[in-house]
Length: 374
Image (cartoon, rainbow, N blue to C red):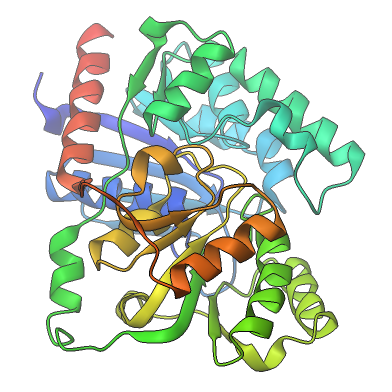
């Protein structure tokens, strides 16, 4: 069976133009399939009026529905997935909220479902900030339920995620490790006219989504303490405008800590402008509670900017080049890591790349295996 005979249904709670690690992976994957004329349909959430509810490009179709929010997605998406399944070979979905309706519809239609699992948090849910006790228990139980579902394969985006899946009882034969990848040629092309861009030894950068696991509750107070030592330092926060409630919490905390003069918030930068910000920074800060892979780390390393890392989750596995790792996961630990970076006290690890083409090839191989076995 040739690849172009494949018909795949992606079930994703969020997709482009929404920006995040998951969206980046599936956008790159669907674009690669489109180039190969492999049919792919995408069921996702309709975010705003600027995005069409139906979109077709080459062999790709996108169906956007108003599922209200990610929690309603887990139930309201079952019907459109079930209807679309009669025209496809199998489903590829992702953790968390998209996984449940995908497996339910797959069982009903007797179609195989594979899931890319980005992170397995387990007891970490109870350590995360910004969540009520009720919410922590709800997320913990939902993850436990998802891990009990009969997915055909669990795709782990790192060796760390694979190990966590094994600890949670997923058998080894059900797990495939496919590490996320980035397009180095695109990054090099976008930065081709900035080869002489100077680094600013006083500028630091944090970029990424506003997630409860990203360690912003450690970063802001640590930054306050650091700027008392290094008042000339500037932190660029490149973050989205949504969720608005979370953004307001961050802004309120900045005002409360009286550090607004040393923090510049940027929204909706182009990828090129983001890369320029990363390249001209002394270091990028990644103080996460956990990472299943971490696109931010891979992109930072691609432009050869050092990283200040929590070392949690897959960060020990992914981070290389010049870096400082927090010796303890606390405000104090991040403060000392910032000081170490300011003094150029870097650890150095042999550089490793994560090419997007390797990721795409690995997914195509598993797709072909599923198609043949049907």
